[in-house]
Length: 77
Image (tube, rainbow, N blue to C red; front, side, top):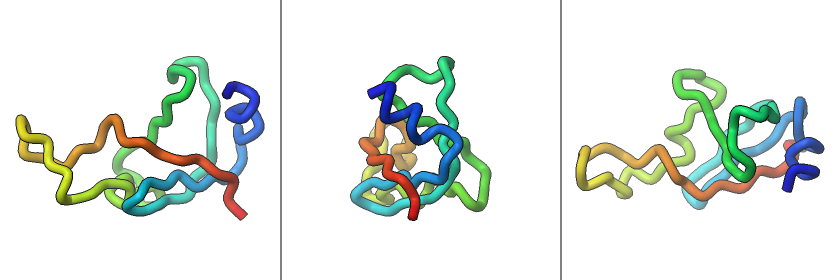
């Protein structure tokens, strides 16, 4: 999967779930484990709320789940 990640590095990508998508620029770094995607919170253009399902509530916190979401990363057109 490293070759796919490196191919996307520095390019616009679409990060999507079954609930929504967002567009951003991919940045491959050794500080994120292979196979993982990290989207920073607090940026209007990369609003992670678009990826979540407000019906998927963490029973412990009562908040919408923001971690461990399965995503797809594809090149943006």
